[in-house]
Image 1 (cartoon, helix red, strand yellow):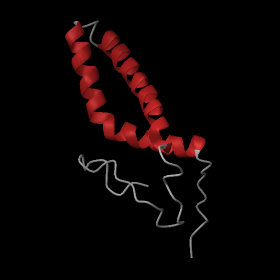
Image 2 (cartoon, rainbow, N blue to C red; image 1 turned 90 degrees about the horizontal axis):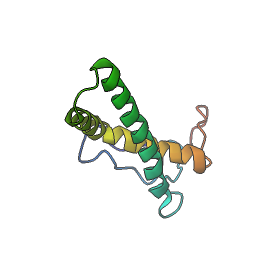
Image 3 (cartoon, rainbow, N blue to C red; image 1 turned 30 degrees about the vertical axis):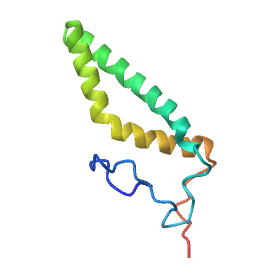
Length: 106
């Protein structure tokens, strides 16, 4: 679904116009993926919660700067992954898309 790997930090968001296998247009309508930022936000909240709980129990409630540094670092590292998963979830939940492994465009 994406042109480059998530490790290409300057190109992790590039998507082709159409799927090379089935010809599906990824941009269903103008601004379709704007809703994905809400999904990305939800995923980020879960990560912040998990990091906070982990630090509280594993590091015996460290100072506030440790929480802020750890959460910010984890979110920055996972930004490309969160971006991609949010777009994929947007397609599956609101784009009427489902995966059919037996389908191939001829």
